[in-house]
Image 1 (cartoon, rainbow, N blue to C red):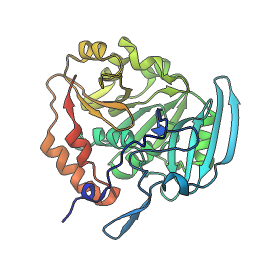
Image 2: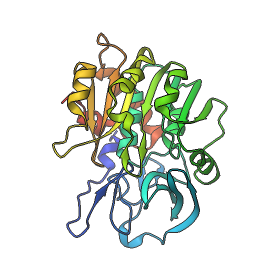
Image 3: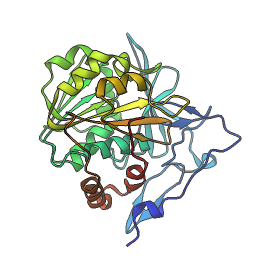
Image 4: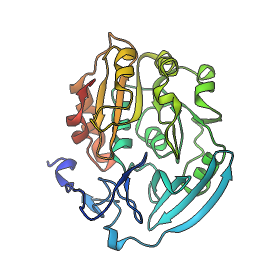
Length: 305
């Protein structure tokens, strides 16, 4: 049977569009794009998969909500079947497909889900940065999680996510409001920790803070994994590569994605290795439920650079 990845069309950058990279993906002055979603709808087996249509078919943007807090402006906008969480001057933070809020539109979120599959049976997860919550919802939907904690800096973010972006009030999920760099010590240990702290200016200070990154790994249960969504430099290496190599002793894996980020997969200790065979098996078994293949991301994995 053909794999899902064989059904995906490849996409290339258009020469007449100026692309910018944000936490959520590519966008130009007027439209949003991602490598996964420039395809339009496509079908895997009997299931119709979402996907943003081509630029000339996108509907007008509709503003659904706008609030201002101590950190700036937060907006929720809609384009067709998609809703976007934006910070500041239209900086996209999250993209949500209304028909399935657990659908992961961008490769960087899919790579973070792939990182979660490094664990054979995770029961607990900690999300440092919630955003619209679609990665959190995907993990709750597809992983055997029993207890999930999320720390979000801005109180309006989870409120808007629940009101406009389909975030479920799942009894397994607890959301705490505050600075993750300050609340981490009071969080429970976890099998999986996701670090994704972005503002309208880029990655938060925690992404390059030695002690905070070390504390994140210390919060892992034995056999756990720390998954970091990190910006990449012009050389394709993750931001702060030298710091990361020193802190984690080069014992981690990188997954570069088309949005321009590098997702880091960091084990709880130096004795813990990445079992590629088991990872491929779990990803393959999950693909029919996901509606897309994680195999291209597995093939992109590389040792610490």
